[in-house]
Image (cartoon, rainbow, N blue to C red):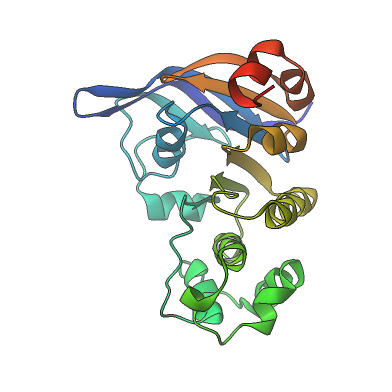
Length: 236
């Protein structure tokens, strides 16, 4: 059994008077792919943003490799080994591909050239376009750049918020192939995805969030064939 890299205990996230996340608990084993599925407004993004230090939890604990990181700021959380690929990619459109990747390593003081080559091996398209402005890339290439930028901080855990959003089906397949490859190289993945079918096929384990609560969990394969999940999220 793999060790737990991330433990969420009774996490609460509020926006004003609205409870976005209502005391959820779950664990992420090291070197696994874990997915959270649920409809819009279920609390998925709020969960990732609180782990990343972008939103202050209203209650509960976030433990990373046994350390309490609940109240750390986002830079310290990146230093610990957690990065977030945000929804909508959020690349710097006027900077080149290479400049965007270097920004991903902004907290590092060591030589990044070997890791740049690693990212270029994962995403040959980025190497071809290294001097091109990020904003001129296609949607799929911008998503590759967002993932590559996150990898430049050498995360132990990479969190992805809707990586397939707005992408053509063939591009989505490529993105999920890359997610598996990153995981095969030892990086733990916590994934939020509207495309529940792809997410469940890729994930080792999955949690279903509904209105801020976990209502179901199981292996990706178990939830793929679950009647309630199929009706609610797989359109079958």
